[in-house]
Length: 152
Image (tube, rainbow, N blue to C red; front, side):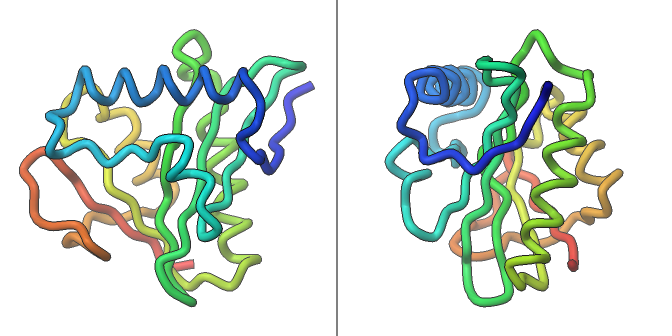
């Protein structure tokens, strides 16, 4: 049975899952355009992190980082490579949007790569109502990055 849980990031499975995520991002994205948070960054008080568990296995993850009282940023969305296109990302994104609304945020924004590898992710965000926007928060224009936002 698949379930989505708030994760304190203390377990070895999620640590390994996120380590693979950061390694993959470093391999695909130029270092100056890499914005994936490591474990310490995800453990900050302004971040809420969820794991998608299928039994004891991590099937996906995602987080939001509070930018201000009304605006949060979607971070660290990842599906296990062997589980891609199985509905996990849609399930998790729907959950995160609902949780962001419940937390009182009025806007949810994200940064993702402009690389072709990330086209399925951008299509998923579009499907959930995200639209392209200018850089937000501390981001600057970057030809390797795409910025999207959604009102809640």
